[in-house]
Amino acid sequence: MPDLLIVTPDRVAATNFERLAQKAGFRVKLTQEVGPALNWIMTKPFDVVVATEALGEASIEELASSLWGTSSYARFLVYSDSTLKEDQLSRKWAFDLLGVDFFSGDDLYEEVANVLTEVVKQKISKLAKFRILVVEDLEAPRDIICSFIEHLEHSLVRGVSSAKAALEILRTDPDYYTCLVTDINMPEMNGCELIEEIRRDSKVKHLPIIALTAYGSADVLLKALKAGVSGFLVKPPNREHMTRELSRAKRIFYHKEDPRLVKSHEIDEVRKILIEKGFLMIK
Image (cartoon, rainbow, N blue to C red; front, side, top):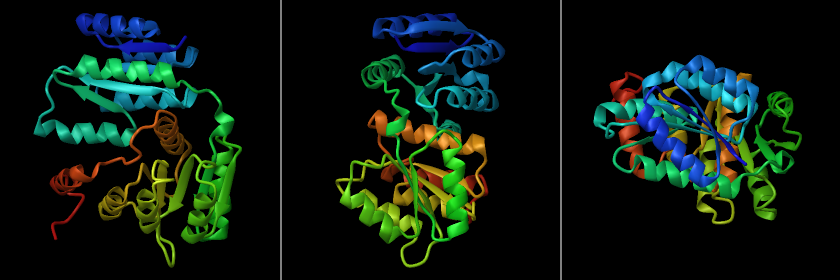
């Protein structure tokens, strides 16, 4: 039986989520505060955590990191009672970049119920089937990245030196690899071009892709988002951030989610937010 943790001081919302979870077949734990929630997460693996946006971004990030440190397939759902407005979009994107699902508005409970049903249907615990292909043109960084990922309990990791080699491998056996980790700045075909090529290929377009770059600028992020990236990390990634992105990739692959971190029609809105925050210059 899957396990769910609800973190909210709102008793009405807690009761509604508890009913949904029990109906879907979950065991449920409830708490009002972050401290007890962290203790629960360290005590046992949860398949889903539902938390109120009112906890704040810092607490939600702390809970999510702890959750994925113990249960990398888990889903983290953040809810808001209010309808999503323009001034909330930046907070929504902050959650999206963390790999957290954000729900609000009139369809809140229906959408959460759909997620819970999907988790029950597609719960998977066979970590050995998660195969990672790393694309990095420089040998030393490639070996370091592969070794780093392997030490995060992913034994099936292979590194290749070019986007061309990666495409050949993926197209030869499109069902073998379940995640791609690629450098952005590579000769001949760069990482963004590789991502675009994969997204155009019907046999591998579902693949979650994590982009690595030494240049963590908003321009590079926007290009990767346009290409169809699933996650984005600045080199050298630390353990917490890499674990977060690999956890996101697992959820995308095993729950058959959209692998694009940002949908095509949302790119302009993200660009607007980056400009407003001062991360991107108007051209």
